[in-house]
Structures are given as structure tokens and as C-alpha cells.
View 1 (cartoon, rainbow, N blue to C red):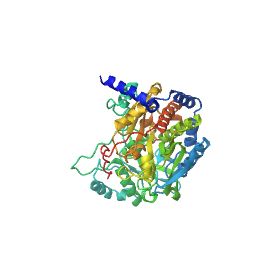
View 2 (view 1 turned 135 degrees about the vertical axis):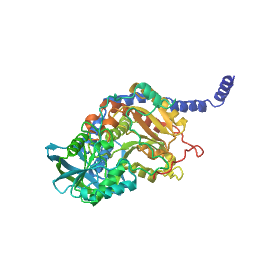
View 3 (view 1 turned 180 degrees about the vertical axis):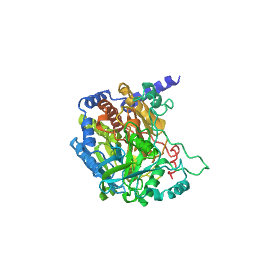
View 4 (view 1 turned 90 degrees about the vertical axis):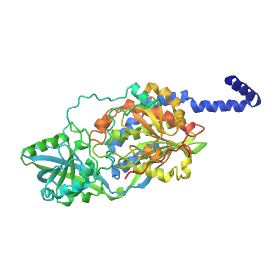
Length: 544
């Protein structure tokens, strides 16, 4: 009965103003239906003329690693702008932001056991630590802190170590024993897993091989120091008490085996307040520990050369765009973080994300499309130190939901990719359910490329990756979920994160899917739906 009544109304309206009604229907179709012709062109350009691996080569082989504040990072950002400009992008520029710490770069490092056996060591230096004074030799002392101490317990322990560490190369902590794992490693999500995670029908669980989370502190109990806090305090103690080297077991940062090494940084960013530091392979650390346990002295030699760059206190985001037309003051953004850690060339984390987003935008420019909204690529600095570059950009341009700037109301969404080389399998967008509904039908034709769906998020928590810098302030940050491949268990922040770990076909497919999504948002009559003042989730309190 209701359907018959609506049909009668439509017929009456067509008699009165047929052009207006037909135009409304056409707009609705554009808003919800994929443009098959443009999607076919995107596929063809992305598969047959891809530049993604050439971009990968320059960001990794030529300019990697790209530690925030280092010349490598700035040079990579400048190259990316030149490259996008050569593709026809406009407004290419570096946007500075205050990093507040000197730049740092390791130039070379070598280490050897010289007694009671001869053996080269596999290690990486800890970032923002000093050089050795040329080649230094010395005896190794193993300092073993108590398990999970409180601040006061650890201070008391260190008080008894002062005379033992002076003039020594100090290993901090026990050797981490890593039993052989027989668990299979799922390098791809199955289609069922991807659909469960991104269908919107219910939670699909974390992706395979996702990083384990630290258990929370128990309420009412004295706060225990984390392993990173123990190492930080130990390093500062050793520098103040005359140790010549600090040596760490890389397995303190996860299941690092088979000579993989994961090295982060001195968290005070002041090399004068930390000793030269080697993050040793688990195998080398274990061998030394066992020989010391026999009562046999061990001597080593290290030669580490690091450089400090005062100009690194200013870092940069790299920006370039494809100008819009009738809605050019409204912006759709896509990007990833350009900075990396220093143990390798930062291929999967996150040159892959930058290359994919540059490629997605290149595809659209190569096709000659005339987007209604401006399409802007952003390659962030400082992600690895706490999403610093993207937060600075959001603060400068948009403000927050609670205190918005004019550009806040002209922002149409930010796509972010930052989980390695695997195919894009789904998206999570900050917004009400209608936000995902605006993207699902457009991306459904890419199921053959492994894309499973779009879900929404209500979380304004900051952390993990740069899309959360946008969702934290109430803007539609869109995180892209990927097949894990070897990311969290092999390449993430390790000395294996190189060009060789990239899967070209997966990168091409991701760029195609993202190009289609960006094009759709740039062409819609309306911007993505957002939470209203009544429905906007509360912003969580800042972390202590």
C-alpha cells in the first residue's frame, strides 16, 4: 500500500517538474553507484603503467633509512615533491613543524668478540646515542635487574651496581630464551577472515600476527617499570657512572630470532646523557651470556660512528595535490608516514605506504580526471616518535571538533596505509554507520582484488598510525587494513625491512582500490557524513 502511494506521488511530481526529479535521481545514482568506466581505466593504468616500484626504489635504496630529523628524511621528502610535480601535481612543498630534537644518523658500526673467541657481532645501534671514541675494547659485565621492579626498587638496585659498571661494557638484562615455534604463520587473511573483519556484520578479531598488547597495570598496586623504562633508566645510569658501552638483547623487543634485530631510540634524545649502545642479535647475546655464566671473562671491541644534525630540530611533512574544480576548497587527503627507523631502509614501514598513496594519486592524474574536490597527498614525518608530523598538520589546519578552524568544515576524509606490503583488504572509517555506507558500494567491484568491505569506528583514541591524528579531533580518518605478509613478525622496525620484502602485485592492487575510493569522495555531491554534536564520541583523556 505504501509503495503504491509513493509511486503515485512520483508520477504526480514528474508531471509537474520532470527535469528536477530526473536530476535528483541521477545525483542519487552517482552518489551510490560505482562508475564502471572510470574504475576500468583505474585498473588498466594501475596494472600496466605502475610507477610504484620505481618510487619504492628511490625511497628505500637511494634515501633510506629516513629517521626523523636526519638529512635522509628531508632529502626523501624533497624527492617525493619533485616526483609528484613531474607527474603534474601542484602546490608541492615542505611544511615545517617543530620536532624539538637534534637529528641523528648512524654512519657505520662494527663489533667483535676478541676474547676468549673471535667472532663478528650482529647488531644495530640505538638511535640518539653517541659514537664510541674510535675503536674501544673492554671487558663485558652483565647487569641483571630484578623482574618488573618499581621505580624505588630499581633505584636501590642501581645503587649497588655503581662500582661494577665503571669502565665496563655492560650487558643489561638476562638473555631472552626463544623456544622454537611450531605455529603456522598466516601471511594472508583468508577471505572469510577479511569479510568477518570488514563486513560490518560483527567483529572479525585482530589481523593475523598482530602485535600483542602489554597487559595493563593492576589498580591499587605500585606501578611496575616496563622493559623500555628499565633500559632507559639503565642507560642514563651507565652514562653517569663511567660505563663505556651499553649492550641490549634485541629479543626484549619481541620474538627477534635468526639474526633479526629491532632497535629504537634513547628516549631523552640527548646523546650526551646515554652511552654508546649496541642492540645485539639474540643469538650473539645468548652466546656471551652463557660464556660469562661459566666464569670466563669476555672482551669485545666496538667502533661506532654516529652524526648529530642540529638542524633536525625542524622536521617536515611533504605535501602535493591535484587541484579540484567546482569544490576545490574542499579537500580529500591520502598519505602515510615517510619517516622510518634506522636499522634498514624502511621499505614496509612505511615507504610502501607512501609509494602506494603517491601511485593512487598518480593514476588519477594520468587519467586526466577533473576532481571536484582537491586531492592532497601528505607524507608525514615523526610518526615513529608519536604521530608528531600528522598531529602538527591537523592542529595547524583543522583544529578540533571542540575548537574547529575554518578548514575543518571543508575536509572530506583522510586515507592512511601503514601495515606493510600486503593487499588492501578493507577500510575502517571514523564516523557514523552512514559513512561506511557511502564507500561500500563503490568498492564492492574490487572483491576480485581481495577487498572485503568497509566498517566504521567510534574511537577518538590517538595511537598506532596517522589516521588517528584525524579521528582524534573528530574528522574522518580512514585506516586501511592489509594482509600481514611478514610485517609484524619479520620486517616491522627490523634490519630486514628492505626493498626485497615488497610484493609488487599487492602494491599495485592496493593503489587501484585506493584511487577508486579517493576519486569517489572527490566527486560526491556531499562530503562524508560525520557525527553530530549530539553523537560525537568523547575524546579520551591524554595518556600520562
